[in-house]
Length: 211
Length: 211
Image (cartoon, rainbow over all chains, first blue to last red; front, top):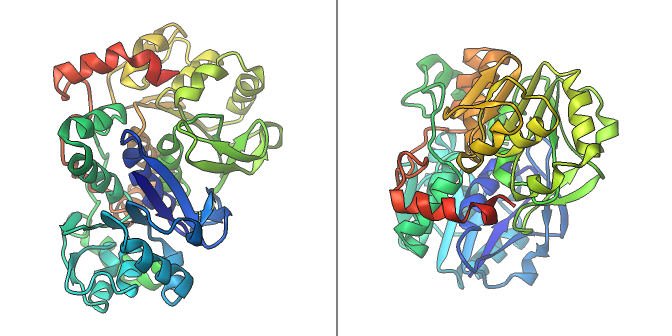
């Protein structure tokens, strides 16, 4: 099984590495980081560099596609190199997935029309512009399309998908080995749970976060 | 504030990227990935490359040190380049931290003697060999030393530490922006919760996981 993770300038690192850490443990999986050019791709704050091993053209038919989000997503929305590759790769995949605003790229590629999907909570309305029906769920399955909410939700998506692909026992094994028994010291991880003034503050600044 | 994340061959990616994603959002923080040599450092399965921007010598006095774990840790336990740097860096830090078996490296550097600490659940006994008192907690604070359990626990550590450094509001902001509202689809993330036969199976294979 070939797993392709798309990278682009100013992606969010955990969007990509969360599901990577879970899904790369599927027995026999080959995971490849893919970008327009091979070499280092910088994340949203520029402080982290992940290496893209292959170009889009070199990975034409992955079995599982993962598209992370991040502020750089905004600048890829009319990049036909990326969007065209997403469409072609999607023609081959068993699963097409995204984390955070990666779903807006799937949307821009025309892959989410009429589908239930999710995204970062600040981007749910934008998802609608691409013909998708946004939901407030953390991980959304609609046929072979699986979208996850903001940043850290890719870990939950990875486990849910691993269960579908390799079975519950394999998924529980990976959960145990990655000790994914979350104990957040605060309870502010969604707009429903965070203090209302904090939610309002970030809604007001969303343009600076998402671009 | 300078945050240094140590990299070494066959580290586990999420150990490093989990706390990175949280702590790099501290206003004014500069995060730097550090290794024996600059350039690409490969993770435990070789499929992911993170770029080390600086050598150990170039980062002599970080404010916050993060040491990830992973199977490669085992081969670093007598690497004086790394251990000596950990000791020197620790002389400057406000916080010295680890995720997963990174605590064994702090232990090998002599930094955890007489301290409460944690590690990957399969490595807790080994921690004792370095003079530390292992606990079953997910995140352990002992003075300026903060250790986290396996792989994904670095996210919880990052949030707890961010709260201490920048305050509760800043920590809740980052939790909201990274949408860290975990909803694991299984409940097998610790040896207490996973099916007993699975725990036994991995205990029997721990040599192959930790090295």
